Length: 278
Image (tube, rainbow, N blue to C red):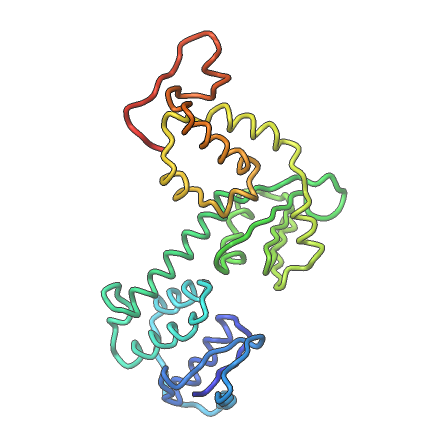
């Protein structure tokens, strides 16, 4: 077994993969490892990439895009699958990219998970304003399941105009100064502290609004947790309210279509809907 060490980036993996394809090294002969990973006792280091020209490797542009997207999926075998698909396609087996194939199904499953995690970032990240004369005007803390930050963070640059902001995660961070984006891995400790300790002055107002508009009569816990996974609750202002509101609904509040303190006021009472939703 040959161990291929690289810096853990898709760009470096692509360079090493092309050299291995030109040398006709099969997937089962390789063990991919980033620089900070340990390897097996009997693994041999891979030879340095050859500078001599080998057979020309033609790879469809769409396949490279799919491989780059799937590379953001965190798993111990992320690079092995990518090389296996690449190997099969270059040998003429285009079925390796299809969902009906074992490798193709896994590839597209990872792509789907990565895109969904990017949606989670866009939907559940909350910026807090900073009252400082220099540095970012807004900061946020997020804990993604996959390596989507530098790719998905451009969404906020397009929507927040010239406002500067910073997003910190346990592994990496990005900062937008209003014109350019800066990415760093690992995330600097000051960035992490700034994002985790920032207080949102509008947080209490948002929680009051969320509680007053929560509809216990339409609560469907499975749908709620599917659309708003539990792992995000701890970093959302309303996250601490959700278990209380769900418990209150199970205790009898589901007969009303609004919060108890709202339902108790004079006026038309909204009753339980026949259909159950989130």
